[in-house]
Image (cartoon, rainbow, N blue to C red; front, side):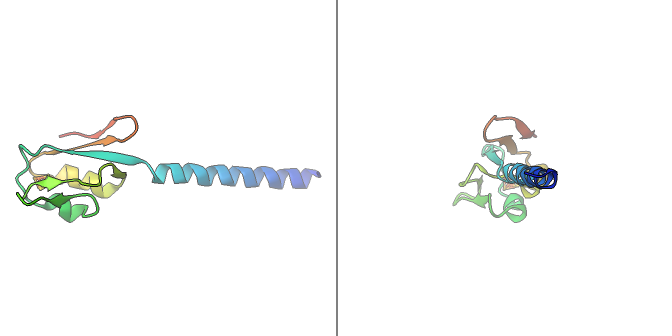
Length: 100
Ligand code: SF4
């Protein structure tokens, strides 16, 4: 293998590693905990992140798909909850992302 071929192979491997790292970041999942004792059923969370939050028949928020892929929409929902009812954690390690 020539020096040029070796450099091309190394570049290809680096690109593949970068792409794999990117995929790992995109597939991080967060668990959603909702304190139903304080939820006032405003529906703001479902408005911010409909993919993750819904209201049950009693008008309280639920997160039936939790854990879900991480995203700024989840953080926005937790930050804007008027009842401070939403906690977000990493699914794998349980590391706190947001707590009221
Ligand atoms: S934003 Fe907060 S108070 Fe409103 S429905 Fe969602 S969890 Fe309940």
